[in-house]
Amino acid sequence: MKNYALFLSLSILTLFSCTQPTSEVQEDPAPTQQKSDGLDAEQRLRDLGIELILPNPPTANYLKAKTVGNLVYLAGHGPDRPDGSQVIGKLGSELELEEGIEAARFTGISLLSSLKAEIGDLNRVKNIVRAQGMVNADPSFKQHSQVINGFSDLMVEVFGEKGKHARAAIGMSSLPNNIAVEIDMIVELYE
Image (tube, rainbow, N blue to C red; front, side):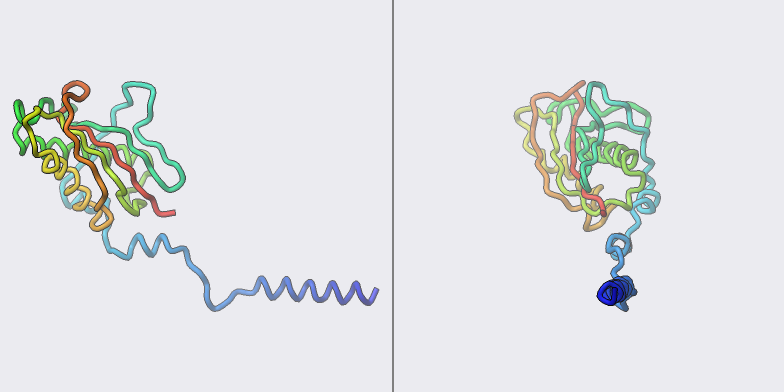
């Protein structure tokens, strides 16, 4: 019986010492990281005068966005204008470089709209990880990367350093419905 009482006393003492708060309380790093750059993505959109659009439903059996762990995979989006129309045409024969850059920016706004619909608050974004930009281009067109800069520059305007990403800019012989640009992206969220 004495051994049991001693065991019980030691067990309670051990349990009590393990549950005592320490002076070094670990806080969740995500909120600190989110605020450390001082950038509020939602406010940046307002400052830039950008209104997100209501994402159109997918036209086939796929999702506009899918979250796996702390990554969001966004399907290819096109250059959706605020009025519901799209930028149509082939760069180098029907559209000029400046129109392609604007199309890529519209595509970025469309992607941000689907991202917000998926995650609720753009301040949850830790990094824009990767983007693949496809340009509907005449075979003689060679400025694919400058076109996709319209998207990349927007991500940096909204997210600052977190908006810098790896990317590809690829020329295509055609895109669905003759849209000028299609871009997909991968986004990392704070845990």
